[in-house]
Image (tube, rainbow, N blue to C red):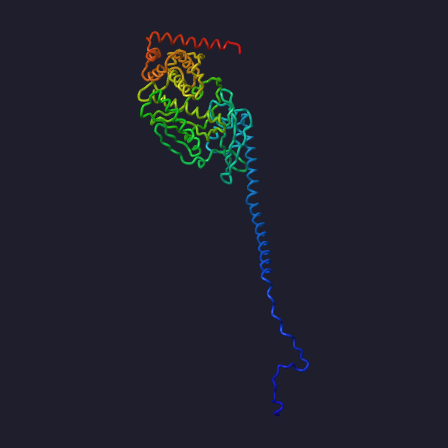
Length: 446
């Protein structure tokens, strides 16, 4: 029994047992191999990420460009259709291309179509060039509304061609249709107060007013130096009045028509402070070339000079409120001397005026001044003859004497320092020669 319980422990293998050698420990790869694999993996990840970013940018950027191009083409087609409707005087078709907005705006569109126009005239002295308008740019304001800058060409009375841009607005409503400019485009009015000139305008016209202001102040200073303006003379130039919605047919003007006469009537308010109302360039078109900018600023300056003259002569119990043809003639001569108009204005000697000098003096009894520009031209031709060899002081005296003079002969007598009878005779001779010269010029062969 003792033999059975006698165990022996040993590391020796049992009979027939085969022992495997112990597994060897794994050997770590060199550091260089590990870093190379990491770089390759990082490069692959970077390339994948870059591809995803490029694809995303293609979706975000390329698609909007294509969409904007399509919008521009569609809006340009509507602009072309508007031009065709206007040239055909097709009011109903033009209305169908417009979205119903305020009745006054829609009516203005119809009246323009009746006159063969799709847009207001930047200045009444301009004649539209009969060619298609060009869409310069289209900007998406919202998902449904765009602003298009539309270029149109016009001819001036002397035959020059100028280009004006008009912001036009369109809404997507089953198709692009013309709409009135949104209030958000204009923003809040700006009131800019100065020593003699105040300005009221919309932010859209800020750059225009900023450039125009020093020019107007310089012109006004020169006019006041001649007219000796009072210290309290003040004028507001208002570009923020948008009641100028009605279309105006271009005027058939002579090539030498004085600028002030062609712009009649300047819209002014004499009560509650003198205010000159002018059109916002972004409402009726703003110039894009040097010739157009020069014309527009001279046109504005001529009307500023007129408003200042009106304040000097009519305010505080001066000349009868309805006007006087010789008053307009004197202001036209001043605009020429200030370089706002051609020097030729002071040399006009003929006109087909049918009224006498007494009738020209009493405008309110015979005609509305701006409806009879030929009568003002007649007064201008008469003054040009009478003042040909007179000193500048005589003209200034005649200007100021308008406030109190009762009749043309007495007025001329005081300004020129001659007897009333002599003044009356000179007026009659000048008026007769003005009409005779006009008749001779009309009968002369071309």
